[in-house]
Image 1 (cartoon, helix red, strand yellow):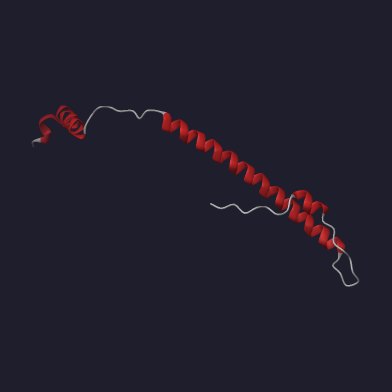
Image 2 (cartoon, rainbow, N blue to C red; image 1 turned 30 degrees about the vertical axis):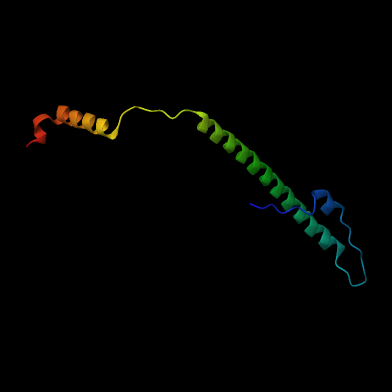
Length: 98
């Protein structure tokens, strides 16, 4: 996954000033819009931080699980089927043959 470099920081957005001209934009509208962008930017940064932390936690959890030995019962499929058959005979008795 390729990561694109972030071009603007929160401070860059806060400090940005636009030149005014006779037919320019309404300064108040621009400021209000930039305020919305700043809030969104802060929310995205917070979400990215949370996701990175969760990713690290899950990676650690996966590593720990991989390090643990897998439990082995030592039973093969044949052994399991044999035990199941004996259990059925014990529980149902002669009813199986009827």
